[in-house]
Structures are given as structure tokens and as C-alpha cells.
Length: 354
Ligand code: AHR
Image (cartoon, rainbow, N blue to C red; front, side, top):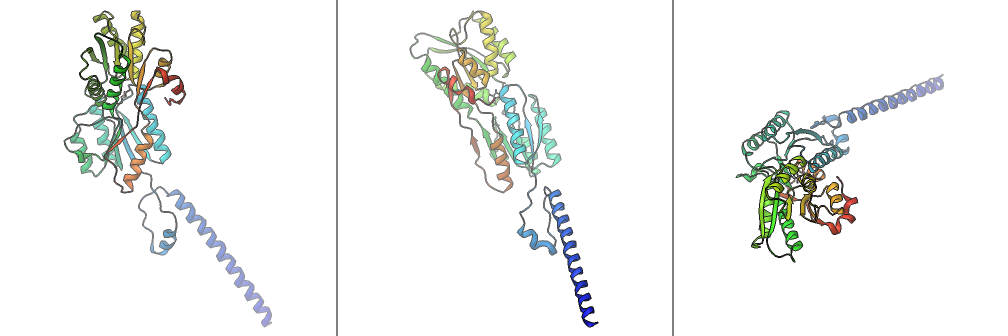
């Protein structure tokens, strides 16, 4: 009898332990699931009972919020830039709030204010023009939100209003265009008449590409900029303005320096309609490096393209993550670039990403 009782008691204890194991298993599964679901949520304070488990587990990383004020969609460069930012944010698991201002500084300021109201972690701005940013940057600073400047420069008296500026050196791009022209024309004598299609007025690529180009031409008195006008970085305006240059100067233009490819493509149409051969009768130098511009170089209609790289997304996301980890970023992150000519175009065209 005693033995039977012991056996029964032993069985009961065994059963109870089995139940305990099963219940613990179920609870364990539930905890895992809850962690997965709330895996993106921030600042969870572990309770004292499970603190040890959580200390061993991977730290929970929340998804950061980036508000990006894009200036517009005026060119192929800009479209590629927006795509690069979207893709890189997605890849990095960063929540992107993107507002396109369609060339309006007012809209950019409104967008930044709305990012502040939504409590984003970081704000990035590709500024349409250089000036007029300090008040809104101060609002961001009061809200404790760090600001990254992308692509175009801002003219600021207080450099502490932003963390870093990621983008090209437009002045150097202008210099590269100028040096190329000097080399191309080294055997030509007499005056060289240059027409310039500038980008958006007040925008840093327009100011600096113009400045760098002039600096490179320096004291070469034969190099004469006989016409210079803004065509807003768009193909349609590029065509219109080039048409008016040709009419005003009766086709007597030796060189066109265009601040971007879209305007150069428009200008090529105008030159052909005027009955001249682009790339031969008029030397054409452009900036950006779109696939279409490379194809034009292969056809001999553009002579040289200075690269301006729009693929800023990966650099921007890296900056956001590093900033959120409390690291210090360099004040300036420059995208490396170079110049391509008719000679190198064929070899390079398949590498163009946009
Ligand atoms: O700010 C970069 C410039 O803006 C690009 O060269 C041009 O194509 C764009 O619109």
C-alpha cells in the first residue's frame, strides 16, 4: 500500500513538473512574441524581475524619424537624389518624412516646422537658395532637433545651427569646367565667345559653378563670357534661353557652359534647330553626369561633363545613425567627383546610375 502510494505520489509529482515545464514554455513563447511586436518601441525600462534576461538580450533599437525637406523635382539629378534618399532610409530602417517644396523656400520652411511639430529625431534640408535659413534653424535648435544640410550650401552667420553639410564642392566643379575649356582651346587663337546657362538664382550650385569657372579662366583675356542667364536647371528653360542667346548673337557663340545636363539637353535642341552642330560648331560643357548626357557625349554633341553625384542617401543615413549614437560628425562631407569627356564617355556610360 505504502509502495502504491509512493508510486502514485511520484507520478503526481512528475505530472505536475511536466505541466510546469509546458506552462513555462507557453509563457516563454508569449514573451518572445511581445518583444518582436514592440521591437521598434523606444526606451522600455526593464522591470526588476526580468532585468537580468534583458541585459543579456540584444538591446532594442528603435526606428529613428528623419524629416527631409527636398527642394523640388526640376531635373534628373534631383529625381535620382530623392530616390537615393528614399531607398537608403528604407534600407537603414529609418522612418522618412519627405516633403517636396517644388522650388519654394517658404514651403521648405513650412515643412521644417511640421517636422518639428511631429517630433522627428533629425531634420535634413536640401535648400533651394543660400540665404534666409537662420530663423527656422533656430526653431529646430530650440526643439532640440539636429539639422543636416544636404546638396546645397546655406549662408549662415552661426555655424552651430547645423551638424554637417553633405554634398558636392560646386566651386571645384566650376573650376574643372574652366580648366577643361582652357585645355580644349589651347590651340585656338583670338576671342572665344562663351554663353553660360546658370541654374536657379541664389542657389549655391549656380553661384559656385559660375565662380569656380571664372576663377579658372582667370587672366585669359581671350575667354569672354558674352551671355549669361538663369534657366532654372530645367530642360525647357535651357532651350528657351539658348534660343534667345543664338538670336541675339546671330549664332556667333563658340562655347556653351551649362550648369546642369537638363539645361544642356534643352540647349542642344535649340542649337540644332538654329542649324548648327552641337559639340562641333559650339563646344558644350555641362555638369551632373546623367546617362542621357553621356549618350550625347558619345554622339559628340556634348564635349565634357563634370560629375555631380546625387546618390547622397547612404551618407545621409549613416550620418543620422551616428548622430543618434551620440557620435560627432565632421562639419563637411564632400562627395568625390571628376570630369568625363568625349574620350571617356563610351567606357563609362554603363556605370551611370541615373
Ligand atoms: O544642387 C544640385 C543641382 O541641382 C544639380 O546639378 C541640378 O541638376 C539640380 O537641379
